[in-house]
Structure formats: C-alpha cells, structure tokens
Image (cartoon, rainbow, N blue to C red; front, side, top):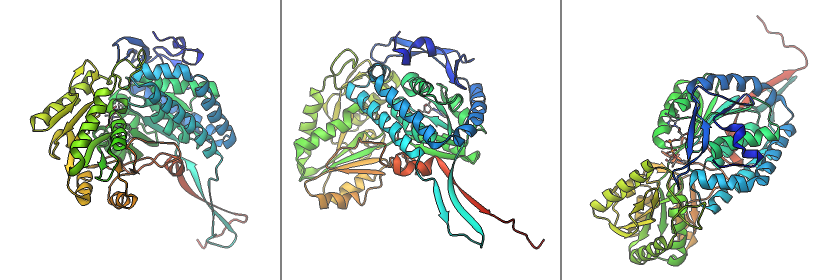
Length: 491
Ligand code: NAD
C-alpha cells in the first residue's frame, strides 16, 4: 500500500466513493489499483455502480443552487486554496502520478504545474464580467444577456493524464457555479479523482458540489443518461465518444467530446534535422506515446528521409526504459497488456505489409521499446490508426502539397507540427491543415490552461478547453429583461 500524507491518507478514502461531501461505501465494492511497472497493488479504490449516479445527481442538484448563488469571490477563494494545497502536497502527488500512471517525473511535474494553473485561471474566471447590457427593445425596459451555469456537469476522463484532464473541466465548471460528478477511469482512480475530491474537500468546497465515482463503462453510461445531469464533458477514444454523443443527443444534452488523434509532424527538406529529430522524438515517445497529441505520423520530404530515419532511430535506441518510480528513465511502462497487444499488432501488421524496422519493435511485459518504422505507406495500419504507443512511423512525400494531402489523410484533426527554416513555407502549409492545433518549428504535444484546446473532425465535436473558451463551454446564455412598471397587453 502506498501511504500518503494527510491529503492522500488511504485511511480516509480506501474502498470508498466521494458523494455528498462524505466518503462512503458503494454496492460496487472496491478494486485494486495496479501499479503498471510492478503489477502490485497500490491500494483499493471504491468502484461505483450505476445506482450511485442517481444518488450523486440528487446531491449535486441540491448543492448546485446554493453554490451558484455564492459570491463569485467565495468560489474563487476555494479554487485558490485548492491550488495552493496541490502545490503544498506536490511530492506526494508526484509519487502517485509516477506509480499509478507510469509517467516519468517531468510528466508528473507538467500535470501538477498545469493543474495549479487551472486552479488559478478558474479563480480569475469566477469574478469575470458575466454578460452584456443589451440595447433595450422597448421603452422602459432593461435588457441583459447573462451567462448562467448549466447545473450539474458529468465529467468522464481517461487514464493517460488523469489529473490535468479532470482539472481542465473541474476548474472552470465549478468556478462558474456548476456542480460536477466526476467519473475517472477505474485504472487511475486516485490521480484522476480521489486526489481532486480531497483537495476540494480540504479547500472548503460545500458538500455535494463535487462527487467522485470511479467506475467503468456502465457508470459512464448511467451518467450520460441521468436526467439530473445537464452536460457531459467526455475525454477519451473516438469510438466511445461516438457512443457517448449518441446517448447524450437522445437526451438533448449538451456534450463536449475531446477524442483521439493521429497527429502529423511534417519535416521539410530545409529543416535542421538534428533539432527536428529531437522534437519529433519527444513528440512520439513522451509518456510512451500515450497522449492524444502524440506525433503518430512522421511525414518527411524524400531528399532528407534517410537521414531523418537514421537520427530518429539513434535517439529511440538511446532512450532508457524502466520503472519511472525507482529509476531515472525516459520511457515507463504502458498502462496495461491490452494496450501493448494493440501496439504490437499494429507494428507487426505494418512490417508484414512491407515497412522497415529502424529501431525497437520489441517489448518486455508492459515496457515497449521506442520504435521507428520507415517506408510506411498511407494504407498501412501504423499510418491509418491511432497507435497510442511509442511508435514513430515515417512516410515520405515529394513536395509541400503532397505533405498537406498526407497530413489531412485521416478523419482525426487534433494537432500538427511543421519543421522548416522558412516560416512562410510553414505557414502556407499550416493554412491548409484540418487540425485544431498547429505548431511551427515545434512538436505536437503542448497544452496550457490559457489556450483554447480541442480538435476537429473525429478528434472532437468542436468543444474547447482553456481560458478563451471556458466561459462559453460551461455556462449558457439567458436573456433577462426587467421594467419598473408592469406592462399591460390588449388581451
Ligand atoms: P476510452 O474511450 O476507452 O475511455 C475513456 C473514459 O470513458 C474512461 O473513463 C472509460 O471508463 C469511459 N467509458 C468507456 N466506455 C464508456 C461508455 N460506453 N460510456 C461512457 N463512458 C465510457 O479511452 P481510453 O483508452 O481510456 O483513452 C485513450 C483515448 O483517449 C485515446 O483515443 C486518446 O487519444 C484519447 N484522449 C483524448 C484527449 C483529448 O483531449 N482529445 C486527451 C486524452 C486522451
């Protein structure tokens, strides 16, 4: 058992779910939290049942009314206190992120720093102007357009970056007066949910404003169809996102879907290949390639493709692989054997169809060697599918227009990157890419609470997270008019 400081003391939360401000038993019982690097149990988390969702919604609906009418600065104060608590306990939180998700230390730091920034952005959001004074339609009338909370927001998150992916919703949603029911992936219940419940509990969030129900697909579906939940914010695979969108649509519920990606990094012939290969190595292998923004397709101009493959292969071979908690490594374990089998299937099938292995291609249990494949045709699985593993498939193109066509040859549209010495050439390509995010002379993985994050096409349904978008995302317009004198009508 991983023993925590008072914030994460297992005696408080073990085997329980967080509902109506209290840690309580569930009929679903409890399940082991498995450390991917060792296969050992880090403790036992409560495992919610669909029936818990109705209880959670009842508590949330009651608590939300009062929370929405609290002074905005009181909501901001809770956000600030929770953020400071996160920083205070960052050593403890880091250990949990390393062990529960198999992240390396810099990834844990990134998640903690970004989550702290989410708390602070959320605090500022709470006290921002909340509407507009409209031109009156009639004499004697005051007409206002104001943003009001949605009510109860159901949040469903994956296991790969569970803390920040929950925080990017919880911060703005709670700051703007909503209540939240969070369903983290059952593989990462602590950093995806229990930690947040503990932070908000200690920061003074009123009972019932946040519930945390670790659970599987059946709990997720109960949340999507629960009548008391007004909006669903889902982050996960495109396949499950379609199901969530269909269910939410039938309930006429607002739904934000942040889904998979198959992101291209484009290497033009005028790029500095040493620098480009270092950026691409980070983009492909960071967190074992288990990031929605991972550079999953390396599109390289023909005249520099051999050199690029050699440099990237060399970088892949030099990356140390191992237990991120006990060793200084660059690559940790993948989350589970199902994901390893998926990566292995895609690599084997791509090699069988004629690609060449430059580096990696093997694994020891959950530890997959960083892999580089070259001569990958667009029809091969490593190009066509989201791999979600440490694999860099290289595909060659002849000219800039061919690069654009290859990059857009996917239903996904999350992130893209372009490496070139010519900004004009890079911008001309960027203008034609169908992605929500484009970086020139950088790689594909980047996020911050101050930017509007989200994808196009099969990567999402147009929702965005981040400060320019949060107000719109987690509130709705209400037209309010008032007049001093009552208005009489002819009948
Ligand atoms: P997943 O879709 O299998 O699971 C995500 C969440 O949905 C989990 O909490 C899971 O329990 C829940 N779930 C599963 N079936 C459900 C159902 N029928 N109804 C409701 N909820 C259900 O995804 P994953 O394998 O955990 O995560 C990897 C995927 O997430 C990748 O495709 C990755 O690209 C994507 N992702 C996207 C973003 C983004 O911001 N666009 C961020 C991280 C991950």
